[in-house]
Length: 359
Image (tube, rainbow, N blue to C red; front, side, top):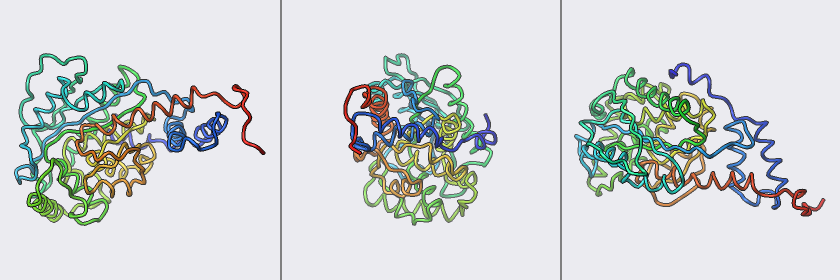
């Protein structure tokens, strides 16, 4: 599916299914609303999928990986070669996301959409290794502080990589829940610039420490984000242009994953700051998308709160996370499963012969 065809196919939330979910919840043996956000999740899942009994059994986390030319400006605590090394680690099953995904029965897919340099050989994926999709468009982006990170054509191509991954997974097997994550040294600089462009906030309000840079490097990173905004003059009314100017190949692929999930009525769980920046682009392309998204957590990255506020998303968790890799999405998935089991396994007042609310 192309982006041109995907965007018009994104539906509004199904209000009929949401009303039916609320009525079902109020028949269960509990005071109305007493399970709080779990009940909200049940209703939201119904709205996204159009089903009161939205299935949750097939859970996948897709990680998009790409490198950034802006790392030449020394904005990260790690060298750009770590991106390729971590892709190998994901596929081999040795990263945090592999352990977390395995703990909740989710599979991991890793998409090389713009890594710079060769990937390390992986001979043993292990029981919790990830499937690798090779869809590299280029060996990383250009330096966004000196001009556009990529062309508009490359930005659209990277978005469509994400769309194809969703289609491919759904053709080969079911996809009930999609968690999205990323890997790309330098991508918090890119995301900070994107968030500044879409929110209008100054660079120092939305730029954080990323991989854990010191105070001096943080000040330098802010100046690089400011330089990127000055060099590119991004127009938030032109989402593709803004993405091309300031984004990364993996950020663009995340936009495609988000759009593809929403178009397929699959709940999409965002990870943290980088996936949030991609969601801002997706939301600018189609405002109906925000309703299909679930914010897994509130990152400690400075700009993430602005992203959540802009998208009107309330995160499920607040654990001081800033790793990325889809780790927040993996940690939030059990809450969706718990909500589904509460929905499906609790008795009703009638079936349990329990008196309902008086009046």
